[in-house]
Image (tube, rainbow, N blue to C red; front, side, top):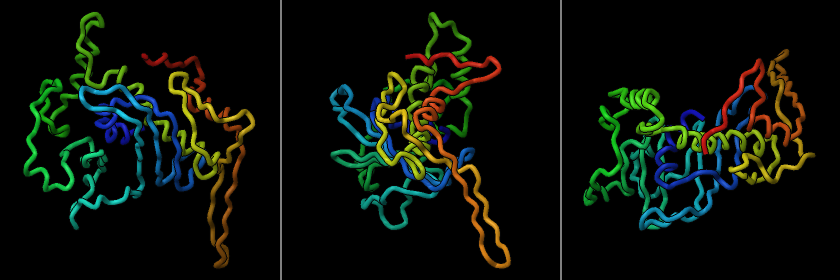
Length: 259
């Protein structure tokens, strides 16, 4: 729910994504309190209305972390890096591929030699005042957020990442966390079907169970390795509902996200 929001933002916005219809995942071992060291997640999205002259058919989004990578594009030359040292995106279309670094920075066509004949389009997306395209040089993004908070809801210009956009986007991102917990190593071993409008899985039954590591210890006794790994069994549907809409104590609660 952190770096994925930074990295997947360009594709979520550009491709008009909202809720996935299904999600599945695999990962290294996780436990009741800590995430896995590495994971791979697959989201499937339905067709969306065309965006101008561009059709928006069904598509699949893959997420990798913890040192896992997608297959290296054959268009990259030896020595050329996928993305940058912090991550990146590869968009695979019917007519070619686009690659970016982390935060969608430094987009390029693949192979990169195609950039020699590429004409940059004229800017059409509103820019944040004070920004220069490099998030490390200014705090314009944060200032845009503060400005929107101060302006009246009746006539304010929405922040570029207002809750109407960032709320559903974050829900989509953390669907991957749910997939790791529910369909991964000790999970249900199935592709989970998601009803985004009602925030619920539609193919988890009231009797389904998942196992989660609660204790994992390794020792060496007189040169002999000893493993002490223990699991606890939980009702999958109850855990899913709790993770989706957490029970807050001491009177705390969260308002409903805007539609």
